[in-house]
Amino acid sequence: MIAAIGVLIGIILGFVVDVNIPEKFSPYMSVAILACLDSVFGAVRANLSKNFKANIFISGFFGNALLAAGLAYLGDKLGIPIYIAAVIVFGGRIFDNFAIIRRLLIEKAKSKR
Image 1: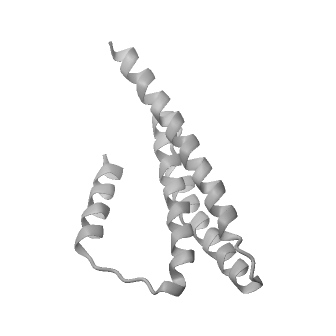
Image 2 (image 1 turned 60 degrees about the vertical axis):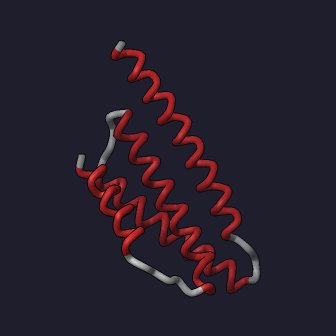
C-alpha cells in the first residue's frame, strides 16, 4: 500500500514540477532512470512472490542508478558508448520481470476463481 502511494505521489510530482536536465547529462540520467525502473519492476516481482525485502530494494535502486550512471560517465570519458550495454541489460531485465509479473498476476487471478 505504501509503495502504491509513493508511486502515485511520484507520478503527480512528475506532472506538476518542471525539471529541466541539461542535454549533456541526458545519457547519464536516461541510464540511471532505466536502472531505477529495473529495480522497481524487480520489487513488484518480489512482492508478488512474497519475498520482498525493503533493504534489498533501496540498495538496488540507488546502487543500480549510481553504477549505471558511473559506467555511462566512464564510457563517455573513454569515448566508448558503454551506456548502450546498460540499456540492453536493464531493458532485458525489465521485460523479463514484466513477463514474470504478468504470469504471477494471471496465476493469482485463476486461483481466485
